[in-house]
Image 1: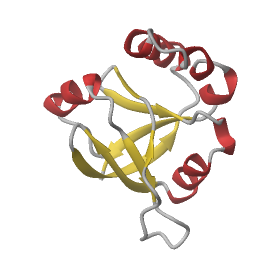
Image 2 (image 1 turned 90 degrees about the vertical axis):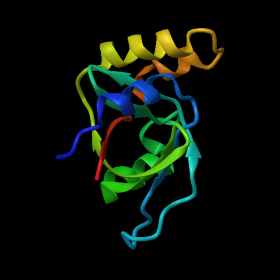
Image 3 (image 1 turned 30 degrees about the vertical axis):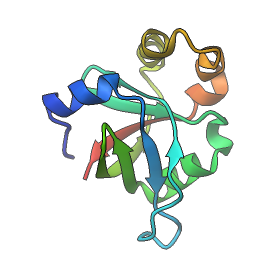
Length: 122
């Protein structure tokens, strides 16, 4: 599995423009870009679905395991992996990056926590 470069992770850590586009069920057509929050924890890129595991982009990401993201001004082909651990560290990163937002508390609740995804470059 490939990994992000330190330079990419530095840009990603401060960027707030992530759009996720998992493949549709045909495995080759990108889905509609969906803006979501992203965080970097211990040199890994994570996102969460606002509507938890019911979210359509989350379901596509888990089923197809691939797609693309737009982040820090660029498109990247990526792979998606569900995450069941690191919840505390990812919560802390959300608090640090988005602490001033009224939307923070819902993002660190059980539903979105259960829909945490790590994103890897392809």
